[in-house]
Amino acid sequence: MSSLTIIGRGPSWIECPFFSPELWGSMTCLVTEGLRDKPYTKVFGFDNINNPGLSEALAIAKERNIPVLSTYEYATEPYPLVPIVKEFRVSYFKNTISYMLALAIYLKYPNFRIDGVDQGPSWFLQQSKPYVTFWLGVATGRGIEWSMGRGSLPWTYRLGQDKLPEAFLVREG
Image (cartoon, rainbow, N blue to C red; front, side):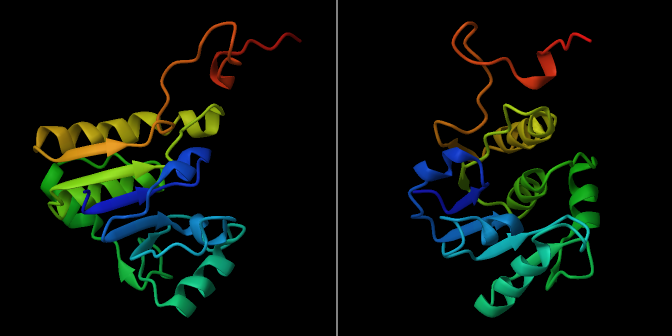
């Protein structure tokens, strides 16, 4: 059993067994149908306060007494960015999941599971994939066991069966 589950709001979250003692999610999980009622032990946000849905997510976190980690002022627990950057000697973050993975490694969780971290097929999501896989590599290098749901981080698209990811599409003018 994993000691921690990190969940995103990609469609594969549905496969998550939700059995870990700790469940970390992004702020957007609190406003996503099907995910909003899960037993989060921490939620993370790295978006500007004006981001749509953030005010509602903050109100839900406050009502449910869920700690909010962030580098922004709305955090109830500041994200330890400086100690993490000093520990790993790198600042390689883009999406919320990359921050969550770095913290799990920094806190020396012996194992974790990720679900709903689909990172595609849109280019907006695909561009974060290197950051997620970087931190998974750091975890592997430090001997941390991790697993993921079947739909998380799909790398291949079956030519002729799946649409190509947006990054590879050539638009004709």
